[in-house]
Image 1 (cartoon, rainbow, N blue to C red):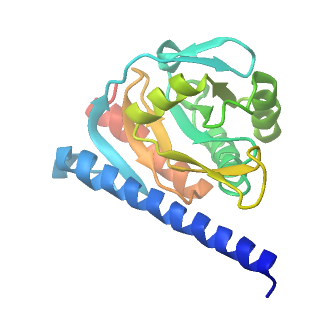
Image 2 (image 1 turned 90 degrees about the vertical axis):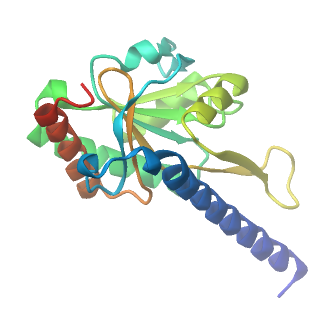
Length: 227
């Protein structure tokens, strides 16, 4: 094995280890922050974590893929699935967006228009992901999807309040513009009040997400929670 091949292999190993660290962070968030607040009668069996009641979030300032302002106000009046990613992502983001597209199409067959979630992708790489780039990216998966971005400070603020981890990793031996970003890949679910109600776990499968979403929707209507 040449020195160059050894460096590439080492770089991949470091990346996998960092992904494992982010997964561990996710478990810490779930079981250290969220789970203690759950009561047994409110726990729903989904592939993820459901909060016992909607968690209010602070307002935020983003720009969507059409150049319009996107704030907490845009979460009101309908359910929202939110995913944090970036357009140069090699595998996690495109596969997740593809599964979200499949999920959305499944839900279109079973739900009324006003019950469909809006799907929002938040860029964790705003230095590269311009409005135009986000527009091209999300439209490649589904024209109904929304891509949003902000400057790095506002992006980090939103990540922190929603317990999202993101870390830029330089590619060994390459210039400063050659990097990847390891990030939390869970999908966040918000209710029509703009409150955070669930985390859907990675890796995502469309049929499971559709099932979990409809379960939460049904429980919300039946028990008048999250409304």
